[in-house]
Length: 180
Image (cartoon, rainbow, N blue to C red; front, side, top):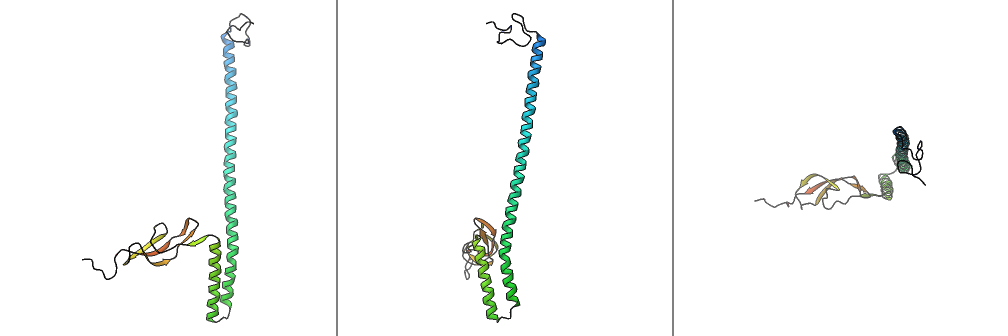
């Protein structure tokens, strides 16, 4: 077996046994390799663009699905709340005595509280001040860090605060103490 003139086997196109390769042949071969590499690069770029487009479509589809889930959950909750609206309308249109009316509103309140708790809503405890759960509107005389008064209840949904409790907090001075 003989090697080609450039020392490689098999012989390159245009090479004859024992003849040196011509520069034109090598240039043509390099041009062909460059064209092939360029074509492969274009295929890879096209593939990358297609994958990017598919990923963008996937993200849009996931976002749409998430929005649809939120809408469905909101619709379900609103339908459950409509029953309370009906109860309030019946209570307002009734000719009940004040005591009966009060018992009816208390019943509606208890049912609404039960529904909200079943959805995971929890009232924020208000014994000691916690800036992660409470908003201090003012301070007053009293034990430092103790919640003295609750102006508006706070609520959490799982670990997330839905509404901060608005409170009055003790500043560490007791009534009757003198500062000097």
